[in-house]
Length: 73
Length: 206
Image (cartoon, rainbow over all chains, first blue to last red; front, side, top):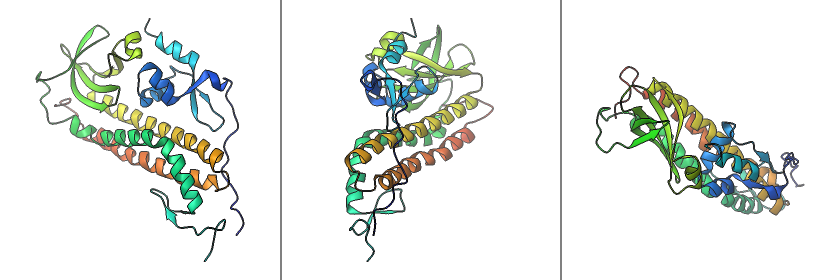
């Protein structure tokens, strides 16, 4: 039988942030001592503007983390 | 026997109805391993969401015994129920010590850099009706779990396509997606049941 056609392909990159300037959700959460769930809540509440990796994974620009750490000041 | 890529399709994985060839199963295992810790965390939260109703009942609201006291926004709050326990924080349903207003408050670990910068306690929502507050929060958790599941699939997708391009990674990703969606899909009922089960007129009795 022939190779099954691949119906699902990774999306192309749509991030404007260089990958070196972004962290995964887990990395970003660890960096500021919160849970991944909490980091996703920050994104949902609009407190963090995320980027996306070429595979569609949500990334957090380091600049956004800095803003988050200063929100209470 | 019918073969796919020269392999007999045979392996069934949790949450998926399709069968995977040996190569696809190996890809599935490798890709899923990269999201396993977060998947487990997601399922654990789903379990806590299921317990929202029992956590918000069965204890007298006026009891101070062992109650956590939180000061946030200059107001003293008494925790009436711990809704979620996360590795680095906890979410409480609280009531004003001298008043009737309620709030959902997140308490971060004091060692957390975020807590040091912004304070240990953060009010997520507040209002007079605890049933409404908890119901809304349950819906938010449910939504975030879906968001989390979708992100886990994207993470696994990268591994499947980069490391196993010859093993129909699309099918592998579909199987992982089905498992993740199944895990959070069950929380729909849980959030709804939490909303239904909370006492309406007397507030929360802890």
